[in-house]
Image (cartoon, rainbow, N blue to C red; front, side, top):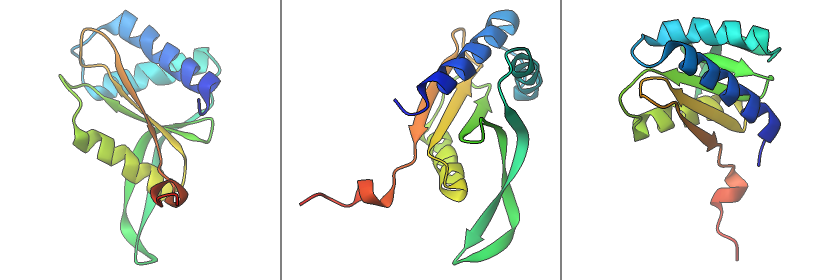
Length: 131
């Protein structure tokens, strides 16, 4: 599994936050609490990292902002919703494409049990059918 140890640590930190706070807060509360948990667990991260976006090789003035990038290789997108949708998966796929990172995690604090989903960026080699 891609970045298994790092993923395990990130999800463990998120579970600790969810255990402490439960569901029902806004995303920003979970983001701040998770940052504190990352510090306690010595998980390296960058918070609210701007991600440049290009259109036909030209840099746009608008950019995405990732909630966290952990270990300089895993994008973490936080949600506090009753359910995740395909649009949330598309959002993190766009982040992965823009950064060329391979792994993204969506963590949803909005349910009675913590919900998480791993998204791996599909490379061009994986999209080409094998003969």
